[in-house]
Structure formats: C-alpha cells, structure tokens
Length: 179
Image (tube, rainbow, N blue to C red):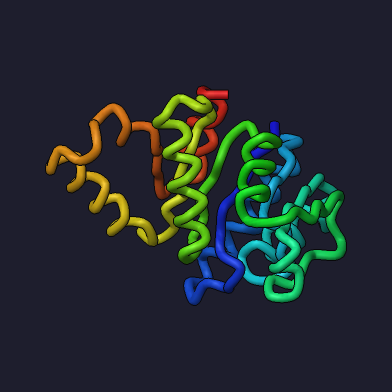
C-alpha cells in the first residue's frame, strides 16, 4: 500500500503533530506502507520522511524544481523525483498513491486536499481521502464544508467523499476498508 500525505513544509506549534508523525510512520513501517509526499526535508514533511527512513521504510518524495531550495529537498529518501511544476507534482502523487492522508498544513496542503477531492467528486479516481484531525486542527474547515452542504453549495454525497477523524485507528480502518 502506498499512502500520500499532504502536510506542511513548516513545523506545527502543536507538539502532538510530531508525536503523531512518529507513531504513524512506525505504523507505516510495521504494515509495509510506503510514504508518498512532497519531497521536502523540513517541517512536518521532513519529520515524516526522516522517521520512516530511520525505521527502514520506503519514502518517495516528489518536488518541483522551483521548490528544491525553498523546501530544502530531502537528500536521504528511497527516491526523490524532481518535476517541472506543482501540477506535475500533484499528478505524480496521485498516480503513485492508493490513498490520501491530510495532516496539518497551510495553503499548499489545502490546495492539494481540494484538488484531489475535486478529482474524486468528478469521478477521475475512487481513492480514499481522509483528514487526520489532530487536536481539532481542521474543525473550522469541516464546519465550513458542512455549512456549504446546508447552503446547497456542496451535495451531501460529495461531502461524504472526505473522511475525517481525530483517531488514527479510525483513519487506518477507513483506508483498509476502501482500498
């Protein structure tokens, strides 16, 4: 199984994010799950990759040429693929992955989340997408989506394409059920 994680190239001020990064990468290693991610050596991205690599797991990073210095491309991965731009990055992440896990992050993470979710809504793929809602980080986003449903701007069936939980075991079980 290959799971793509969309997450921040910055560190979170919430120390639980690092704790969960270590726990989930241990889970990936124990279950032979490969990590597909954005290729950075910094922030949450770097923490996830470092942890799984130290355990002996498989990590593939995909980074656009223009972000090689800004996000400090990770030099110690199983594979680092340098692509032309963000569109090619997201397309390759999609092609290589069986599922998408959303960790805390900023605008880039939201961009990736909504693009892959829109592709699912349009029927371009049927891969599961789940938010790991550490300490309620995504609560306001989830409320926004629920409000959009109540306003008739998102169909209930489309809202259900995005799973979320504050519990890793729930997310893991969701992935196992859907893949």
